[in-house]
Length: 240
Image (cartoon, rainbow, N blue to C red; front, side, top):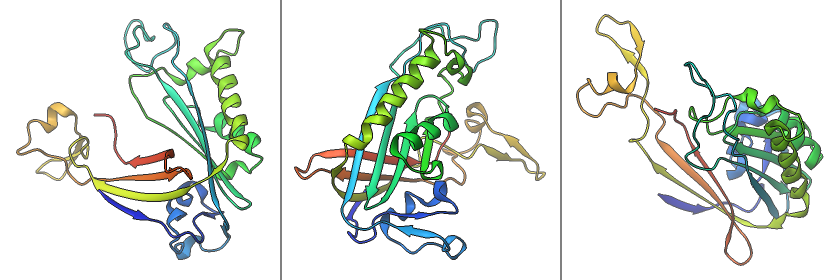
């Protein structure tokens, strides 16, 4: 994995017309593509981050995204979590959340309100875990309901971010990972295609992976004491 210090000037910039695609990519200070150059807003000054997290493990019995006679969570093998963080440079702030649940728009709205920024400057992603609870589990807003607990804790974590900001330095690293995912579009000899599952892949010669994006990247934000305050990772793949 390579590791490089990032330039201090213009570390944070936002393509106002497409923030979800370019917000993190612009951290490296590169010029924006011509297609999104109009409306670029650039941060200046010291870079700051704030981060918080909470346990979002559901109770047994909530809906599960599976088929069968009883499509509910029947066993939990490990804790699930939700992480919120914000990156600020001058008067430009971006809010992020990464969760083992899928609650995109409601979480973006809450991040926006907590950080006092437009919702367009928030990005929410999930681990896309097929072995977690189904989104309807978050609809239970009754007293003691899982949805109510999740959003209450999300709001509390997001509200704590403005008080958590501290100055950081940032470094970037990337590596190549070609063994944990594969292109699931199979091609037959007659030119037709099919959805390739693992049992199909095992029938192909060699260790088939097809055309994938193998880059695994990491952003590391360190405090003044050199201790990491935030690690942001990215890898393009799908549960297989």
